[in-house]
Image 1: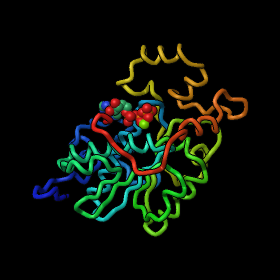
Image 2: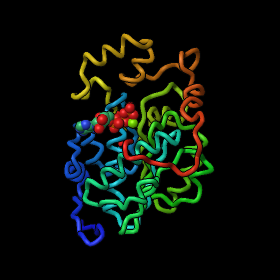
Image 3: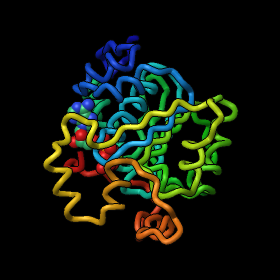
Length: 258
Ligand SMILES: Nc1ncnc2c1ncn2[C@@H]1O[C@H](COP(=O)(O)OP(=O)(O)OP(=O)(O)O)[C@@H](O)[C@H]1O
Ligand SMILES: [Mg+2]
């Protein structure tokens, strides 16, 4: 598919795996299974540093470039995480041959020449109202409160929009846990542990294991669902820590944050 970047016309591969490679991401096998699927609801339960935000960013930019006029909404529990995923998406967009003017580097939305937009927001119900969304990406979904997730869903109704939920588990509660364990087969489920990813060295994982409580290690890297009753880290504490001090105003992105 051809997309205009100013006066230059750039060809964007329609197959997302090919697109990823064209922008310098050589996808892992599990990332290929996500990129190659056109399932409208994907839930990815992944260990730390497996590359979930990267695959989310590829999906976001690919959708915006290949479906003119689409709206891609990227949300995360707090502003910082939304900003991180957005900066990955912005970088991929540039890698795809669409240089951005300097002023747009300070924004958290991309407005493309084809009428598509990519917007990054903290998953706070009052900030995500009013959108009609073709693709919703929820990063760190297990740390997003149910009411904030449910508050976004109406934005998908008119468009029959797709959703991608990405997260490391955070206890046996909340919509991410429920959807993952729901028997209804209308979600594509992909799980990847950190020790299944070739670029994560076993010796590095052992260092982490020795420096944190075993349960927490197993949650973060082996995708285990901790009991919320009596657990070391309560869902609410994690949620509070993630959003502490964060504002919901427009996000400022610096050049050193990719
Ligand atoms: N297919 C890939 N090939 C090479 N490097 C990759 C690939 N996917 C991700 N990475 C790199 O691995 C690191 C972690 O990626 P990313 O931030 O997407 O993971 P994550 O699962 O979201 O991590 P976290 O758990 O910290 O949120 C980054 O440096 C990223 O550039
Ligand atoms: Mg991430």
